[in-house]
Image (cartoon, rainbow, N blue to C red):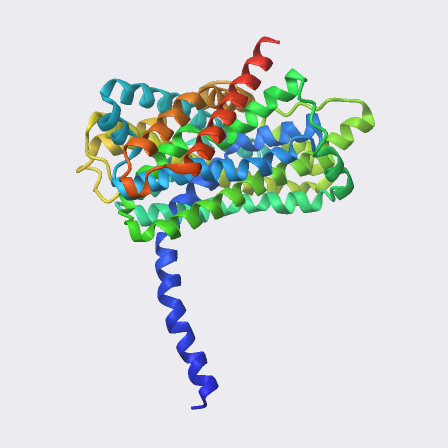
Length: 424
């Protein structure tokens, strides 16, 4: 065999172990980021594009590093303490503050589940399927995915479902947006407009959510990642942060290039309070069959993966604070309260959505609620990174102050925007 062929044969053997090891670590970051672009986030991005064109597009890119900074701390905490977020708060600050955090998690998770299942029901409405059929099917699918007794199987199923969100890139491409208009409007920021600030807060709340922090740290602990996995886990989080914000940007671009342009032409302001209304506004411009199928796939992917993550985050968080058995590696009878909490969240949300009016119209309010909770969520996260981590990986030096300023500005802007919009 020639020297060239020998080198070719040897190269993969050197690369493959590192690649295989990295791929084994990948998962929690990508799953939580795919869940980040949930139904409420999709509606929020669409509203942003319709109401303000591309003026909120720059914010989607600014939020990429902020999202990474926040979720990277959950990676550190999960890997170097081996404990979930609720458990770490309980052990560091006491049970009272742990229950305060868990209460905020419960409110955010229930709000998220109502939005996700309303989105799934909305897709069913597009095809004439009754909620009595679509909601039980969605609930059964969400429960079946988790009742596997394996974290890795749940992770793979969540990624497979979440990848349908990539359909939004096709929607944005088919909308034929003007690059010149994007470049111009992206830097036109009406900072003194309360309605604009309200959507800024909604977009921030749509990107950084309490259940994301709980889920990723608990998933890393459940997956039993070790310090040697830290670098790969950070890449997992960074790639996920870029993907989720590109998806948000794609939805915003599609809405700005189609719905906003059409409404300016005929002088109307479309209502985008439901999945059906967003789809109906997009599909005439993109083609009814293509637009509806692609958009529906994206919404289903977003809703189902976020449903898995939000419900699991709640089950993990409550278990960590209350102290009951909690692991996807355990059988249902071994961790009855864990699986019971997950099933109760899914079934309860399905029942509420089945009997209540369309709740997707509340999606922006849910995201604003998340923004109002940011001081509590980010405050606990920062203090844990300062106090609970081993000295070698604890936040310190210039990066500690970068994180502190970033979190403070993000939380402050989210609260300011929320209050400005609510009380103007």
